[in-house]
Amino acid sequence: MQISLHYSETIQDWLADKRALTRWPRPSLMQGAALAVIALILLPLAYLLMRSLGAGVEGLEYLLDGRTLAVIGNSLLLTAAVVVTSIAIGVPFAWLTARTDLPLRRVWLVAGLLTLVIPSYIGAIAYIAAFGPRGLLQQALEPLGVTALPPIYGFFGAWLSITLFTYPYIVLPVRAALLNTDPALEESARSLGLNRWRIFWRVTLPQLRPALAAGALLSALYTLSDFGAVALMKFNAFTRVIYMQYTNSFDRERAAILAVVLVLLTMALVHASRRATAQGRNYRTGIGTGRQARIVHLGRWRVPALLFCALLVGIGALTPIGVLLSWVVGSGALPENDLTLPALNTVGISGLAALVVAVAALPLAWLAIRRPSGLHRRLYEIAFIGNGVPGLVIALSLVFFAAHYLPALYQTLPVLIMGYTARFLPLSVGATGSALTQISPRLEEAAHCLGLSGWRVMLRVTVPLARAGILAGMAMVFLSVMKELPTTLLLSPTGFDTFATVIWTAHKEVNFAGVGAPALLLVSVSALSLMFILKREQ
Image (cartoon, rainbow, N blue to C red; front, side, top):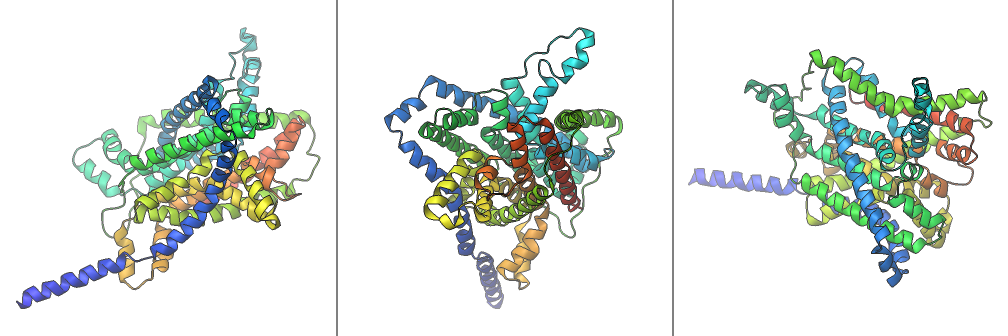
């Protein structure tokens, strides 16, 4: 009887401890923070609904028109092609720079990620100048009798440009996951006789599923919302047609209808991504201090790996940079305006936005991973709306609400930060959520049992363990803000110039020297910032 009472008391104590564990941090506080963030994300959606409902029956007829359906088909085809290609490029590149003895792998990593900081319209212009029918490549081949190359415009040009701009969205979360993968699983598979390739396909790759799904989602959302590449390549995707409706036809109702369809596609992609990673857990299963995975020796595959990285970096980063250099050197003139203040503005606002977005993403990712429920999953999915809506629409919606309801904040830095948060929150939410799937809840429970309160557990255990994923998300937000154009143009205070606005002004004036100099500075500053952020992984 005494033994039974002893075990009964032990079970009661254990249940009490489990009930205590479920209360940290208080879900109500996390939910309140998450709902405040979601309210900001829903502002553009409310604006779109107001505009689209004003179209009435004509709006429905426009939606079912054959040309509108063709635009939807073009966008879906482009998105699928970009995602598949980005995965095929990004996963090997992340693995080579994280887990192998690739020579100068840190240099290859930074050079490969430089496409994150090249604005899409600048990159598209550079590819047209390099690979167009009468571009630099054709001029180099002219002695061989090549008088013209095939046109780069259309689907091919848009696919090439956007793929080279989006594969880093695969690299960063996948690389963070590779750095945190439990090496005991691969060691066990190796002891059972599996070779290197079978270990990768059967052990390593399944553990990357949450990170891969997050990166693929970001790549798809970028493709759907990008304007510069599809506009310059003259491919009729969503953003190009929306822009034409806004500017040429002055029909904001039809543009809003297309934007609503874009939001619905975004929600469908987010839901599919969540189902693909449902109950995905890939945290360490062992005990004791975490160990880094063993470096893989490439051996005879070293030369093909170097050729792969060289081709990727050469087309993705060196080609646009080379074209920019040719514009600056060819003009033989320095920029007319001092670029010091735009540089300080760009770095300052990008760093502040990255910090704000990282803080805003944490409660959404934590609720979705640690407290999965129907409500929390819906909040997580809604957070991705901003990345599927063109920056032009987000900026116009904030201009509308600020001018009508918060005139004191109109054209101020807080509204600009709000625009960046609504636009780039998915970049941080995806990377943070992927990192949280790699942290065993038992570590957080142990810290709680040792007397730490809920928020102290979050700050001293959860955030440090998820550091690689959080920094990856901050890096993507930082670099994306530096090149963001529509949001900056419409929401920045008067006289607040950044590299993006300076480049856009020079581009409108057909001043190639004025485009090249600030664009090269943008790439240089971003490269230094990226090297610092990646160094924190160590």
